[in-house]
Amino acid sequence: IDVGSTTSSLCNGIVASSSSTSVFATTSGEMDLTISDNEIMGGYYGIRLYGSFGGRNENVEISGNTLSGTYYYGIYVYYGTDVTISQNTGSNFGSNFAYGIYPYQVDGAVINENNFSGVYYGLYGYYLTSTSAASQTSEVTNNMFDAGYYGLSVLYGDSVNVFHNTAVGGYAGVRDYYNASNVDFRNNIFVGGTYALYDYNSDAFGDYNLYYSTGTYLGYHYVSSPYTLTYIDSIGELQSLDSTMHMNSVEGDPIFAGPGDLHVFGPLANDAGDNSVNVTVDIDGDSRPMSGSTTVDIGADEYD
Image: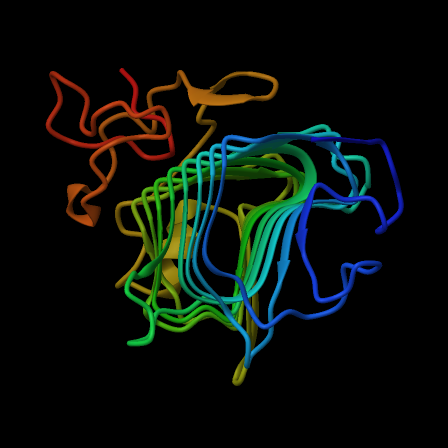
């Protein structure tokens, strides 16, 4: 699907809308829909499903698609139940403020093995949750995001597993924002130009992560009540904020394969993860742990 380079929302790849002339008209929800193995070039939106609270997208799979030259949003799903977004790649976005994957109000969102670069936001997961209405637990697993601002953002999450991701952001590797205590960040690599971790009024759990910042501070931690603002300068200070978390996390340069390639060559992430998250393959389909090892690696890539 070759839409061509555009800055207009009238030109898109694959769209569900109740209007033939606008992408901004909500639908009654797409049901039992699979969008797989497409190459989409250009467009304002690559793939957009625009449901609503009363008309949710249900039982949707978006997998194996390649997006290049999209202007603003790669994959956009607005309201959904049991939505799987897996093994998609995206690069060379046109806007300086582009989004790779944007799921909003999705119950049972499975986002795994995606690789996006050349975006402002890698993943922008807004109000992800897991309730009895969904048949699958929300998870963000085995993804690589290389973004200009936030690599991985989870906002207002409830019952979300965030395991084995590698996220790089020009500002922060991860934004952990107003998340519930049952949001679980483990076995991730987070690298940021200002902060590795941006934590804002969140109760989420975190451990077995690798953090690296090329800025002055490792992290930013804000709590509104009682007011507390901490510029975290080391993994030790991060651990001192809460002795129940980050005791097995590490700090340092993961050493990536090269520009645009977030596979890992450095020793810090090797055999440093938590096996109990029960992720048995990596982004490339390689077994976890790797043959000859008994412990999984931190990040999306299992390596030796």
